[in-house]
Image (cartoon, rainbow, N blue to C red; front, side, top):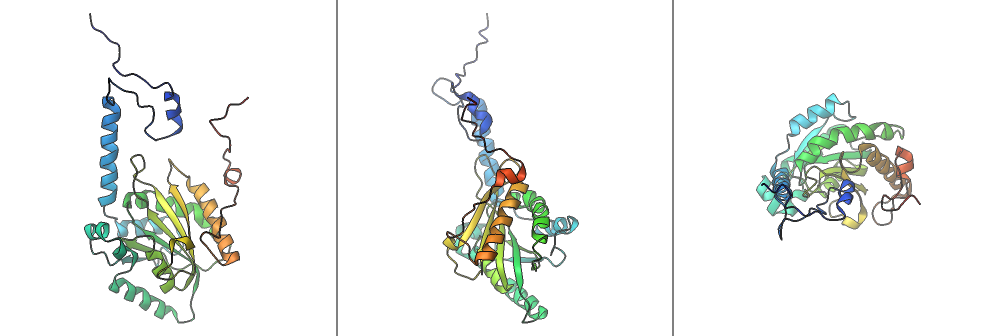
Length: 275
């Protein structure tokens, strides 16, 4: 007679898995991980590796931005960093923080054609970072959610820029060359084993080459399974407004917004009982 009893021994706190994508309460088979979560781990690891090495289709992204009606997309510039290929980008983070000479010259020439007295209130830079998948999936819907919030300020927006092989700090050089007071960098974050498509937002006031990280603000994990586009747009709009008012970003600028109330979310802690 067959024994149909499962060899997997469950954890008593298995119910908590519904609240997180983290690998908790996976159970055990003897002294080992059960087959199903082991295979899921290998798949997630492969997806993370693919996200790191996948090249960004910048031309398709530009078309998507234009089709979505994003401000500045028609004049969008595609730029490259000093990292000439993906392998160099991964091995030399410093090269991903600076534009290539050709891109720097192209951006400088574009601003010269605009005139010496032209400047912008805000520049938005879209960079592939360590997950071009994150940018391909999230950049357009996020900017669609952000655009109406930005429009109410009446700020002058610089042409959008897409940077291939880019790190966060490349936005400082782009923002400086565009003569922008504020720069926001949308960038693919380092993939996790449950989040190969997480996008980060980095904000800098009066950007320039060599800015320390302490002078930047960050909003992380923007994606449907993480921070929603509407919530991230609300938080970024708040930080942009405060940065513009206080003339600074970084450790001196705190997020004191009431996000959940503004976007209809809940502040209830699921770990606390209703009693």
